Amino acid sequence: MDAKRAKTGVVRATTTAPVNIAVIKYWGKRDTKLLLPINSSLSGTLDQEQLHARTTVAASSSFEADEIWLNGKQEDISNQRLQNVLGAVRALAAKKDPEHPLKDAHIKIASVNNFPTAAGLASSAAGYACLVAALAELFGVQDQELTAIARVGSGSACRSLMGGFVRWEKGTRDDGADSLASQVVPESHWPDMQVLILVVNAGKKGVSSTSGMQSTVKTSALINHRAEVVVPQRMKDIEKAIQDRDFQTFGRITMQDSNQFHATCLDTYPPIFYMNDVSRQIVQILTQYNDAAGEIRAAYTYDAGPNCVIYCLKQHVQEILSLVCHYFPSSESEFVRGRSTTASDYSSTVDAAVREKISGPTTADGVKYILHTGIGPGPKTLTNEDAFLIAEDGSVKQQA
Ligand code: DP6
Image 1: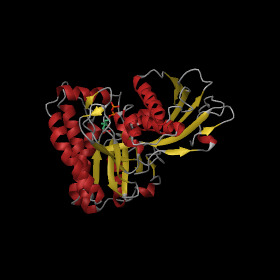
Image 2 (image 1 turned 30 degrees about the vertical axis):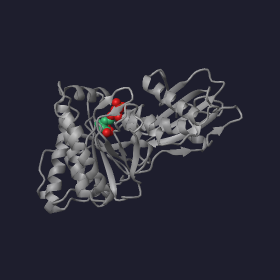
Image 3 (image 1 turned 120 degrees about the horizontal axis):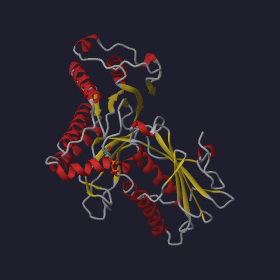
């Protein structure tokens, strides 16, 4: 077992886990308890340098109950999804070793994100993947079955247990044993692939993905066609595009799948709107940009919120950043964050011939900030004491 055991008898493990952004969207469940999807999906795992969750789990026979702290605040651990994850990891450990030394120990969990939860950046996927990765380290269990355990926390979390591009097979079994995630290619496969996240200024949070997708399953006349006919073909085509590093096919399918997911939201009764006016304005600008360039250079995708995620190649990052800066002027001093931070990274002018063909209104402060990131690896185990959120004596450390 790799987990750290202190003299106090407290065993601990700390891991980080990434956010993932789907290019073929998961939308709709065939089983709402096991979180089994009606269609397969595929995502890129984002670089943890810019976005990650970090979780410490600790076990000791002296702990009196399971407990959890999120971003420094103690939360209710009776949440059904958390209970399902804890139960499933304990069951897996017991299956591998009926006399597992931690089988009766209570567990303390402390987790933080290195990005604001309120920014609407898929924090539950990174959070549950991180919890499962940390528990796996603590219990000394490694298995593809872990992706099924992350899935019962939040469906999309199963895709955050690996780096690169990851598929989640919908599976056909009622017990979900074949609804697992696996890697399509590792992060080293397509180093030119970059990701820009445009955090859009939005009012209050809309419908959660959990409840939104079930309204769609109940009321949309289009969703079955999507799940049964459209997605299976797109999964094959986009996997091939990724293998071949074919950005034109990859970009087209990514945008089409985002469009179709939001079309099924509009087809839900009553309709669900995740994209707002700024989201749509970004689509228009990027569409004109791609048309003017005569090829796809910026592939947008939107999840259950107004933020735009752009997949693009390294050689077009500057151009796209300057376009966004032009159409969404901002007074924010740190408007571009992550891999590109200096003005020279994005103040270059867009090719004049391309520029001329793009028109549209500008919206000041429509975009709060841009995060430049890329594709990265799966969860990492940390062993330096500073990284631990729970001390050797089992107490939760104060957050700075
Ligand atoms: C639009 O995984 O958050 O981001 O399984 O109910 O926790 P639950 O839903 P969740 O849904 C993600 C929906 C999506 C598309 C995707 O990531 O594939």
